[in-house]
Length: 306
Ligand SMILES: O=C(O)[C@H](O)[C@H](O)COP(=O)(O)O
Ligand SMILES: [Mg+2]
Image 1 (cartoon, protein in one colour):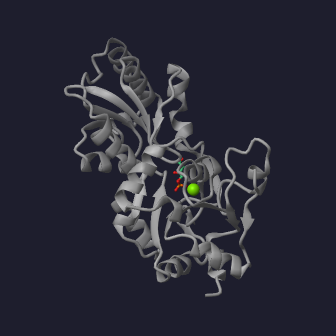
Image 2 (cartoon, rainbow, N blue to C red):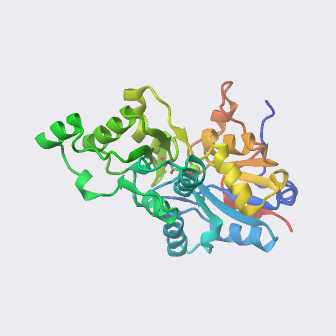
Image 3 (spheres, protein in one colour):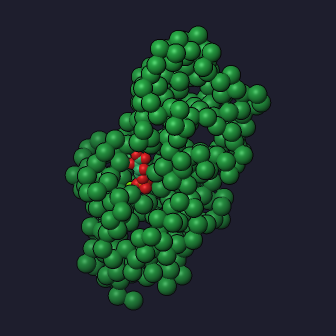
């Protein structure tokens, strides 16, 4: 497997790299920021790409926020953006459910294991849901729960799908409800299956680690609709009318971002070393994906000479 080209500090190589692409799909967590800490030079780098007539699209697996929430975060962090430039796994999941899965009534409700980002995007697509941020699910089990979940009296008969995402309030009650719906044949979806979540220059449980108890109990794998899912790539291609050969995926994670770009047959993939994976990960014999290019940080692209 060809090893990636290192661009940092090489103005000619950076010029040539940028010149190969019209569209940059840019990951968020671990590339632009770590939590609310924006990496140095990110604003100027995005400005540089836009000043060269490049299209920037922010593609995140983080389902805790919907596109308008993200735009508020971008603005709060001083990063110019347009809500139409943002494409998250919560949105990808909502359009998959409403336009492809098309759950038939009455079993057309979604049980959400996740945060408000999923709820907002489902509402935008007129998909009804329960669970999620409902405070009635953010508590300990009661004797009534044990009984009502077991005999089904506490379960909603109209649930036809379970959607699992990054949930900072996951608990036994939520997992028990989700499991029962899956036992009853509900479709099992995930916004994404990232094992870890890069935050505040460290790592926390990712969405994949939230949904894994359901995989363990059912033996089923969910259909994941975030990167590297090609359902998401097709939706992005459709929305932005992009030419895959002139498009580059920029990310910090091999098994989501870089795999997404490679399986999407994009013209290029650029790895940054500010997030989850490092050089040793793609140099390993069993590397899940190897990027075409890499830099220490996205802002190294400012090294362009023209
Ligand atoms: O657990 C998660 O959901 C992910 O770690 C997180 O969301 C990754 O976001 P991204 O790097 O795709 O912006
Ligand atoms: Mg990332």
